[in-house]
Length: 241
Ligand code: MN
Image (cartoon, rainbow, N blue to C red; front, top):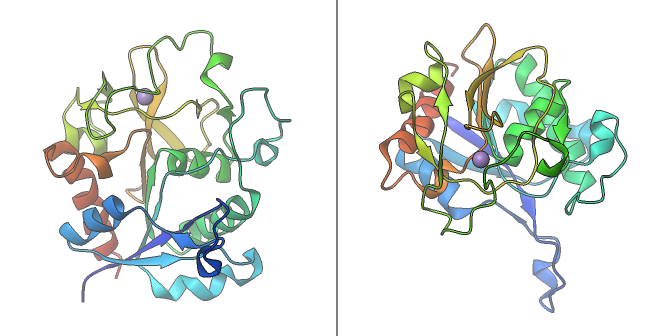
């Protein structure tokens, strides 16, 4: 059997006349396809009450936290900055509980963009609510180029898992206005942009968690380094079956 990969769902929050689409749970098609193409079996998990998260745990071997709205800053002890974007507290509550239980149960974990930030907050780190809060952040991290095109380089820490997947200087896309501030105690930085904005985190002592600030699901078809991130994730999940 292929490793089962949980994708906590985003929620359609726009008003619609089609009653069955109201608050519909969905996962981005490129992420679903990247999981399938690298050998995983995707399973979309709608947000439910955190008290019920434990019932999901036996259904998957790995979990990928994907992109979406800003993380509610109350989860890292801050009031909303004037440039905070849209938030959705219900998804945050669900994903933070799912993350904690997945870590404890030794599931393989991948973070993408908001997912990287959610993992950091869930494990005790903090965020810049907007990159204007970081005085050294100078690069364009909300690219105007098409989302499947790279726009800035990152420097990867030698010896990290990420370095074995992307080499030391991948050219990546960038669609974020928030960033990692304080790194959670169990994580370490394994890539930065040239303005020192954190672009990847990994578990300190295991291969359980790898997260990137960019969107490899939009590049995996034409960018071997992005495909390798998914292949490594599905392989890590398979090793835990
Ligand atoms: Mn970036």
